Image 1 (cartoon, each protein chain N blue to C red):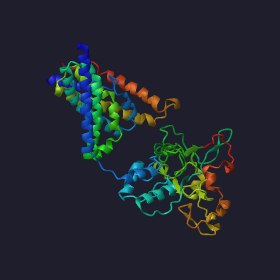
Image 2: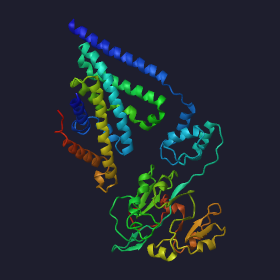
Image 3: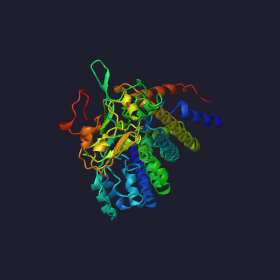
Image 4: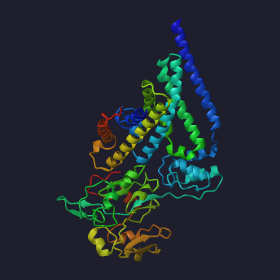
Length: 296
Length: 193
């Protein structure tokens, strides 16, 4: 009998506590109820949910909230693309402009190639062996301008690789490469690159200038075999006047460029390339290479 | 009284640190220690909940002792802590949205933090009165904060270092945690009496 009483008391007390706490929670959920706009959930559903931060907000939830409050335009999500922008615009009852897909481009061609004796025959010249933190920002602070002779080129310590949420950027032969199919254009890599090498371009471009060297021609030639020396041959041959040469570096204005590819044929350093070749995404037109490491 | 208070504070912060000496609450300790500022946020949330849980559980324990069913302590305390975390979460969401956002996912995570249950059980075992219980809870939370912030700052550096591939990430973090616990063993003789 005694034991039965004990058990009953325990059950009653625990049950009572549970009931009391349940009531407290129920009351609290009424008292502290926060109204949320049902559109917020719908907006969240449109977004990819990768939280890449490419829109400039803290994750997809932050961007959805900003759109709801009218602080941000739709179509800032590079990953969701046009589809996502239109869906969000439909929820918000506004019109969205078409969003063109862009991908990241690393403006450096200085992949290092060595002969069988270990002598460098191609690419950006290395002036020192760097053995510190495997981080481009850290490396770029060492010895004035980092271990590369070129002050503008890719250091290849993979800071962008770590920043990419999609596994779309890899370091190959000392230079970062973007896989065009995986890249969603969030530009998280561009934000962390200490040399501001990474820019957005439309995919499937026939011509991209894969160099960022703004040094004088002679200096560029000394520090890299594939650096833009600002000779202007591409500018002269371009039928649409789409190319300008500023500070020893050619640039293409894509509003004028019609993808003819003439400039690529005259570039003495062969650094004007097909964006596909540059991004290694299509094995059929991948440039032949001696290195077995090239994989995406 | 003063020596007792000082003793409790020093024990909870250093010589009987809940994480590094007693090994309670290792899950959030490993999980949320990648960055110093998130670690600090987690530490503050735990401190808050620990102090509140100590107060609430003191009252529940009084009831259990009256009815002579102290063997139900663990179940009752878990009930109290789970409810408390829920109420705190709702309260913050309504009243201090900024803090709610800053704490984010850590708040519900605290429900499963066994350091909170640990501090409540320690209070009961040592027969602390109400004030000492709350003090022990708050100091225990600060001890947790100290441990997790120290560990996060170690981890931020270790992550940048060029360590062997097989040790990268979690393995080297576990080794670092072990070394930190070893260092805290140095406080074990410390007591005020």
